[in-house]
Image 1 (tube, rainbow, N blue to C red):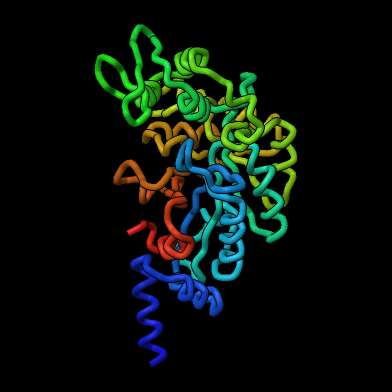
Image 2 (cartoon, rainbow, N blue to C red; image 1 turned 60 degrees about the horizontal axis):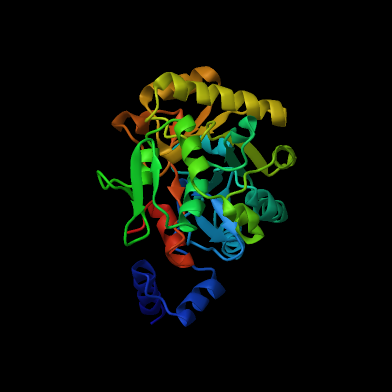
Length: 334
């Protein structure tokens, strides 16, 4: 009888149709399907109070993040990134490493205290945008600024208007402005930011969604026994959409800047948007990066055998806690 019940719960767990009582039963018994062998690097971005997804799909609430930490502590072996790279095969128990991209100040505010409370390590991939006097990434500026205006405007000789979904598109080609901007280097993106309104800066409730780590916060983060700092390049450009020499220079300049601030070796790089080339992998190794990270998928067939590079799994804020836990050992959401 009990086996039939467990099988039923398992099937509903996989399908995502558990009700509140069944979720409570799982939590009470600490039951999980991921026990066994394997490993995964998990990717987080921003943390806020509520898990608001109105600007982008990258944020989860601090409460949900803590729930993950409690579960990870109980059921997984959580290791630092450098230790993860040394693992061979499929370790037992299931082993994970935690990473954060984009360098938001909210990780210092919300994440670091929880890592220290639960004694769980994580690596934070930070751009060197502060080195040019900026406190925001162009993507976040774009997301917040375009939410706050409906006005049409001209950028680099092209007119952009919002469609019925509230997305800015070229009046000529109908291509989205964001996809067009992704192909530019930072000077053009900076021009775009000068056109768009920045009134969101005056709203303290929005700070979690854009403010980058200050140099003082970065120093404090680097001093923690549970935090390591890695590079996320310089401008948060698509490194495959700019000339190779510029992309390579971003890797070198960001490493130098972060090492100067933290007074620690920066040995890991997470490619913005998971975008890289095979030549860039070689450059990163020459520059001194021992550990290189893609995003959710490798880009080239030979990557899977390349010991310099690992893929990650981005946690999905749109699915339930238990469905996310179930997806981790599979490495996919279906």
